[in-house]
Image (cartoon, rainbow, N blue to C red; front, side, top):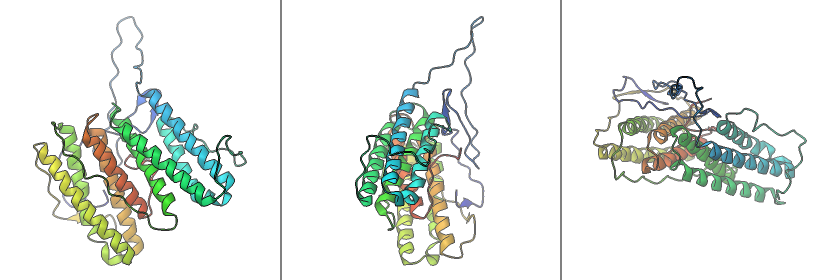
Length: 341
C-alpha cells in the first residue's frame, strides 16, 4: 500500500494468492510481496497402495491455451502495424511487450511470447491501414474488445488464481486501449460501475478481502489529500477527481461489508507516506503508487470472491479503473493487481 497506517491493523487478511505462473501442473501460489498472506498450494492426494499417483487434470488448460493464442494474435497485429509504420515502434513496443507477459503467465512459459526477429516480415493475412492514426485506432478497438471478453470470463472460471489473472490481463488491455486513444493527451479514466450489493451470503474469506480493499481505499483518500499543493492545475483536477472516486468507493465497500453482517474497519488515526512529497514529480509518483496498491487489493478480492458472484465482477471492474488511473499518472504494469513474478 502506498500509505500505511502508523499502527498495525487488526482486521483479518485473506489467505489467497493469485496464480501468475500457470504451467501444466496448474495454478501455483505465490505470496504478494510485502504481504502477510502465506502462499497456498494444494496438497497432493495420497496414492493408493501399489499405484502411481496421477496428476489431477487441469480443467482450465484449454481456456488458458485459447487465451494465450488470442494474446499472440494481438502481438502479431502490433508487429504488423510496426512493420507498416516503423515510426510507431517506440509508441507500441511496451504494449506489445505486455502481451508477451500475458502469454507467459497463461502458459507458464518464458519463450512462447518471445519477440520476433527484428527483420521478421509482416504476419500474413493482417491488413494494416495506410494511415498510422487509423492503425492505432484499430489496435485500440482490438484491445478494448479483448478486455471485455476476458472480463466476462472472470466470473465464470472456477480457479481463484485464474480469475485474478484474467482480471489483470483485462485491466492491462483496457489500459492499452486508453493509452492508444489518448495519444499525447491525458488518459480519460472511466469510472467502473458502483457495484451491486450481494443478494446472498458472503463468505468470511471474501469479507476479509473486502476489508483489505477498504483499508486500501482509506489510505488512498488520505494520500490524495496530501497531493494538491504540489500539482499543476490539470493535475489538481485529476487528483480531486480521484479523491472523490476513492471516497465513493470507500463508502460503497462499507455497504458491502455491512451487508455481510460485519463491521467495516475504520481508517487509521494516522498514515505514513512511503516518501516525502516535495514537488510535482513526486506527487505524481505517489498518486501512481496509491493506485497500484488499490489495484492489488482488488486483485485479492477477485481471487477471494466466489465463482459467479457479483462481487468478483465488481472487483475486476474496480481493478481496471485503478490500473487506468495509475497509467494516467505515468505507471503501468503488464499484470496490474498481481504480485510481480
